[in-house]
Each structure stands twice: as C-alpha cells, then as structure tokens.
Length: 344
Image (cartoon, rainbow, N blue to C red):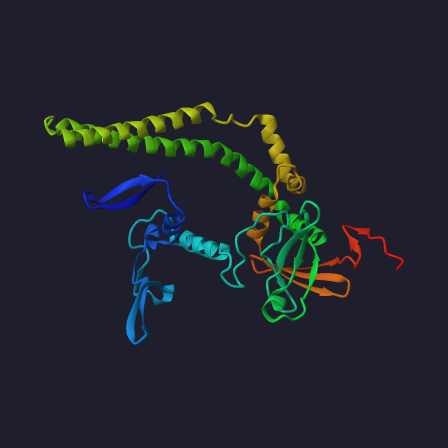
C-alpha cells in the first residue's frame, strides 16, 4: 500500500492508501525529490500549428540538461544522489523498445544473452528465437537489415556453445567473489524476514491510528445527525477491517517465519560460494538468476561469424574486454549431432 492523492468534490484533496500501479512506482523512482534534490522545469510545452490554429501540448519531459533548476543536497533524501543516478541508468537500460543502445529487461526463456549481443557486421542487436518440439532450442540471429531493408540476414547461430562459453568465462572471473557472496546471502536471508515484519508493523500502526481517528470523529458527531453519523460509522468500521487485515498478515508472517540456517546449511552455502561453478549449475539456479548475474558484470558482447567460428568480444562493466571464439555448427548439424544426409 502506498499513499496517493485523491480528489473528490465532497472531500477535496485527500491522501488515501492503495495498491500502487506501474506509473506510481515509476514516478517515485524517477523523482529527484526522494534523493534530496529540488528540481523545477522538468516538463515543458510545445506549440504547433494545425489547420491554421495554434495547438499547445503540455507535459513534455525535458532532458536533465534542459531543466530550469536542479539543486542537489537541498534536503535530506531517502537515498543518496549517487544511488538515484544509478537507478536512472538501470531503469533506462531495462527499457524495451527504446533504441538500439538499451539492453532491455531480461526476457523469459532459457537463452542467457538476449539483449547483450550486437552484430559485429552491421551493428544491430541480435534477436532471440526458439524452435523445436517444446520450444527449447534457441538461436541468436541478426535480422535487422532484412526487416528494415529486405536485404539478406547477417548472421545466425545456435545458443548452446555461445552461452556455455560466456558462462565459463564469467565463472572464472567471479570465482574469487564467491565466498563473499555466500556470506552476504546468509546475512540477507536473516534480514529479509525482519524487514518484511517491520513493514507490516508500520502498516498496522498506521491502520490503528486511522481507526482511532475515525472513532474520535464518530464520538464527536451529534447522534441526531443520522446521515453524518452513519457515514462516520461506516468509515470507522472500514478502518477497523484494515486493522484486522494487518494483524492477520502479521500473525501469518510469524507462523511462516523461516527458521534460521543450521550450521550444516551454513557450511553448505559457504562451500557452494567457494565452488561457484557448482552453484551456477545447481538445480535451483534458474535461467532468470543467471541472466541477472551476467547483466551485472557484462555490458555488451559484439559477435561476428568468420568461416566456421563465432568470434565474440565481451565488454565487461569495468571497461575491460575479453575475446572468445567457439566453433559454429555446420549446416545439417544441431546440438552436436550430425543430421543424416539424403542420397537424393
């Protein structure tokens, strides 16, 4: 539940608590006021002439360089300005269909490098395609030139060897960080339950305050004014219902509270941290988890097909790069198994 402004003719401007929609969350994450900054002039207007008449379009978002005022550290924020700017880069990078430079958010499917591969021949991003009986066989292909200009497609290749090569290189680079990540995972698992309980306790405190406020309003009304008294009683009952809901959530959380890790489980997690390859291939490690790990350290991969080899240049987030080369299956081969050729 998040606060939102509600306008009604009877009550005017009031604050209500409700489940957020996408735009509400996006507005909170992109508003610099939460990072302690004051901004003015973030939007503007555009004037055009249509059919001989002036038309004004308002609310157009400006680039930050075009804002009229931006005062950083204007007040105490919920997060630092550095964290705010990091969030803006992450949101922009997660945007799908916003240009060739944005990687886009991780999509569904088992292929690990969707949105990260760029064709070394034409510069366009590679697409992902699935085929096979159960849609489990994935391929990367560059069809930008074909779709836009009806020219020949650039490159196309299977995902198996490419994903494996990048994953192996990733594990070699992250191996020293495995134990640190395992220790952090232990601490995170302890803190998650306490944080959720704290949030529900705060919501319960707010609900009890609103219920007490509604009760005071009901007690102060003239009993002879039945219309107003009935409305205030309805609000009081609604507030009490919210209190009961929050209390039930808190009781359910206490019942389902995860037990602390045993010493054996802790040692197992530390062992997996030291053996990152085992954790990477663990049954509980989903493709979504692997994609997020890859996107944390890989900025982009430029790929070319030269003869029977797939040549890749992996650009890491820190600015370094690595060259990888894998063999490309020949025509008539798939998943390492040659397809029987016809005698015709």
